[in-house]
Length: 480
Image (cartoon, rainbow, N blue to C red; front, side):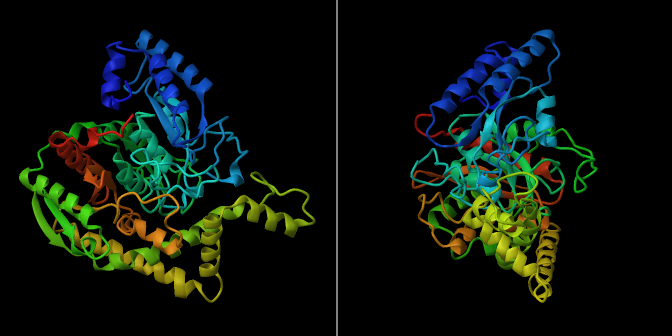
């Protein structure tokens, strides 16, 4: 059962090939026997109860298309009555009193939450090594990283511990782990999915999305996750199409742009080879390939690592040991309470980014750093606008390399370079996705698809058509 896609599981439940309870128990057994450290919390009792309720609804004919389908939830989404830690010691004891909008929408579909997945602390990282709960292992090679910050979700889907998982993408945190783990990951247009109840890292960049085996599954799940939310001021009040209705359109005549800046020094030769083979596959389907330029993209890395830390320093100021979260023992005074609670509760990478952000926002440096970064952000957005007048989609690498060894990257700046091809998409608020494109050295390589604002239908269709002609998305790690 675990090798079935979401679309296939929906048919199986409808045809009564198995029950939701049987399906849920099967996945829970796999999770409990896994050594990947992909989950922070396994909600076994709640999952079995939800599965029983789902089976009743299916029997009574009171079910939706996703009723009874299990999933894994990134531990950054608030879940009422269940620990929501964001991968941090700071929130290790936090039991959310309410559901995030994404959680509520999946609950409304009567889906079954298997547990909360491991992640880089407060979504800050590219390898899932920054979690208070230890690193996640890549199911293709347990000595390698799964990518981050949604590494637990990516590993869970790749290892068939869950048919799909939720993720969040601030600078590539859905697409990069999807690439390194060989699954499909979609980061929608900023504002397409509500951020309410999603613990904030950088509010102008964060966006939730589905992590699945296939583009078809991503379309099915996006239908459930997307939509306007009055609780989120950044949520777009825009109609949500049925994303599954566009998947059979031909890509003949589709204009695809290849940014010359993305195929330059720093891109691993094995990765580039796989990508060019994928581009040729699109060409054989009738797509038109054109070289384009995104000149400001070379500034995306420094711009992002000013904007995101500035926003994180503001968002994480609420964790002070007073209201909720970790509190140090026996503080001498209020200053000692703040200092030790934050020093002991946050990990090194989180503290590093808070300090960068606080510095960049301080008097005398705001104009020199934050304001300048926002101007660069606008230039990046303008570059994309120009290119999308010439092409329908942009394609390129997700990550410059395949998965690297756990503990092998010590320098923070070198780690930041893992997101060099994904950051621009977040800065411009565009939709992007990673789809499995092949293997380099027995490790997965993802192809990145980038669309104009609100073009998720086009992205999903292009990805689905590729997956109809290739089988890279069907590959699973040994033993899965």
